[in-house]
Length: 368
Image (cartoon, rainbow, N blue to C red; front, side, top):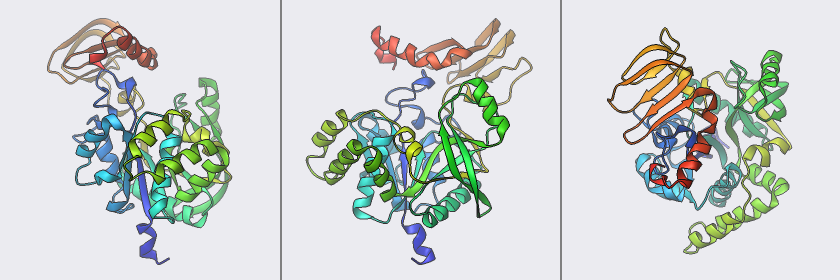
């Protein structure tokens, strides 16, 4: 294959089906986190698509989202992604089924397609370093044609909300980006284990960004998750037929909820990890804003019209012009929107999901 043809075979699969419940009340069912301009004046999803320019041809970008969000995603990505390449899942089944479905559909018309799988809701900067890293990953994936490649982030603190990758043998560099064999994938550790991982220097954070041939993703699904593999193949065969909606709903309803990490990556026959040089944050919860914005003298992160007295270590965010005044409080998360206010202890922000469930059960689903 000629050098110019290498990039013509690269396709991207952007994962954009999440509901972003941990970002309630800003994130809602019909406008979840990835469709919000949380950083800058463009949605996280559009920023993700634009980052791929220069690595993925304009005609090679695909998106997997939920059926409920399909119209909004089409509008948000107008001029970047063709509507027929925005795939609508009838229900959420985590990342393994949706990546498998995209790989199967793409492989039907482009058997040599090499995929870049990217979550839609991450902070990545500078973009130039990200693109260079992706280019290096594509080169490694072509050289190691039976392997899956992932990007590892050197940890800067002992995070317990991220998965980790233990690096193995050093393989060399492409475009000045180091590559290693993957020794092991490790799921979210407790604080003590996370501190040990960081101190060892042998671990990366798992960015969730994957690169590899579509056929390799499918081969691994067939070997490790034959139920999912058979289902996505049937769905791909019906992808552009009148029976698609009915068939996809039936197939999805019978699939397990399982991530690509559990379903494929942990047991794949060959995996590489590249050491990413760019800044990365998965924007998994409101606490990410503390890492991304400066604090005042009371160690508060304030993105609102706020006046506080004896207020310490609070995260205060608002998209309204209302004044938020605080007195004698510590370690609070306060988020204000036009129709809802969240007040929570920062250490319990992971329980926002439970609060959202309670809102629905109590008849307050119109706020979701």
